Image (cartoon, rainbow, N blue to C red):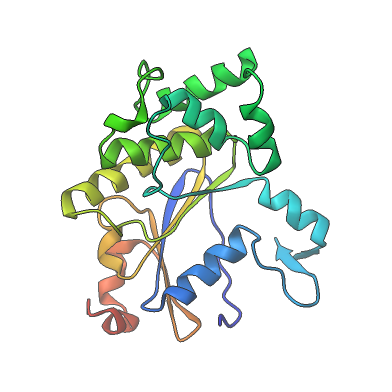
Length: 226
């Protein structure tokens, strides 16, 4: 799928990963999120091979965000964030007990960080698509990740909505010192929000740099932007 693609991602930056093939985009994001492990059981971080146990720890540092995810509409925004902060059996266990004060405080802080502060008791049924995206981001932030992964950032939104969702990310990356990776089919989505563009074609890394520099590259013709 990918052939010796090497890319380094920095805190405080938004990187857009583009390829005309969704499987290539997903392959790179899967590697970052440690969702895939090579057959020999090794991944490489900073040129150092790490074990499967370390892969599990990496997964704990990366939160995947589905900005199109539907919240539980009859529940409050606070409840949705509290549940999003857990996974699997922990989420089920969390539903059977009252959340701790520290958990409620963390969920409120996450809502404030995405612009939903003061609305924690509202039910999610009245949220528009942009506020649903904000809620999904809050649910990821409450896990205290070091990196956020967002697949197909523009899918399901009209042009104006997509621009608003993208506009949430760069200030968030700066303020929280997060690594944020998003994916899209074309480099046009990078305009105004991504610090960096990583383009893949035929399994190879064909561009890695500022989005403004891409149109002058030989690889740009593959995406119709030359």
